[in-house]
Amino acid sequence: MASDLKLLLAGESWTTTATHIKGWDQFHSATFHRGADHFVAAMRKAGIAIDYMPSHVAAADFPLDPEALDAYDAIILSDIGSNTLLLPPQVWIESKTAPNRLKLIRDYVARGGGLVMIGGYYSFQGLNGGARYHRTPIEEILPVSMHPFDDRVEIPEGFTAVVPKAARRHPVLKDVPAGPWPVLLGVNEVKAKRGATVLASVPADQGGHPLLVAGTHGKGRSVAWTSDIGPHWLPGAFSDWDGFRPLWSNLLRWVARNDARR
Image (cartoon, rainbow, N blue to C red; front, side, top):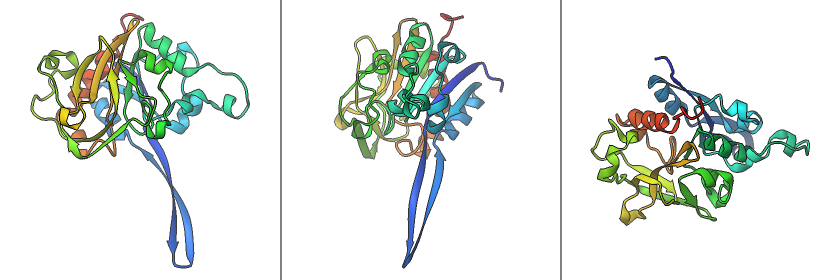
């Protein structure tokens, strides 16, 4: 299917190192993992092209000027800490100045772009507070506010999203099955801002935290999805669910409204 949208997804990758010990002997190995391949493939089938920029690539190659950002209808940040965007090689290695990419994203949305933040250990405030998006320009434009501490909520028994009846009329939920969604295994704890639209949440007896929140900033739109799009908070049953593609294609088309810029 031909693409009618162009998005940039930064993050959702990791490298694992391991030490293997066999009696007296040992050796080391390293493996690289891309957590969004299934997501990108599903969106391609829905007519949405995504440039997938793993975290180590984004450190150097994520856009450093407004014109490069404007080539995209929306930006997706998924499990990529703020340091990766704030410390490009010219700053970290060469001690030279560079544009603040968090401010560039804020201004991009203000003039009509779209932003989605997807949950994970290095999203929102993240593991041990290490993602560090609290009190940054990214928090300013998202429809949620963040805590200044480790905001992960692990739910190993799983939870089924609560979708308010009124929310089902929102364009993001068009053609998404009304029956119970498959279980998820965790979220980042956030608070919906005044005026934002909470489309789904964790059940009240498991915390009642927002799961899917939509909002606006300036001429643009933003969305917070506080769970994952891959392991470990997103089980395979969710990504294989017949509601996965309509949910995410609707969400990305809604946030990528770009008539204000063209």
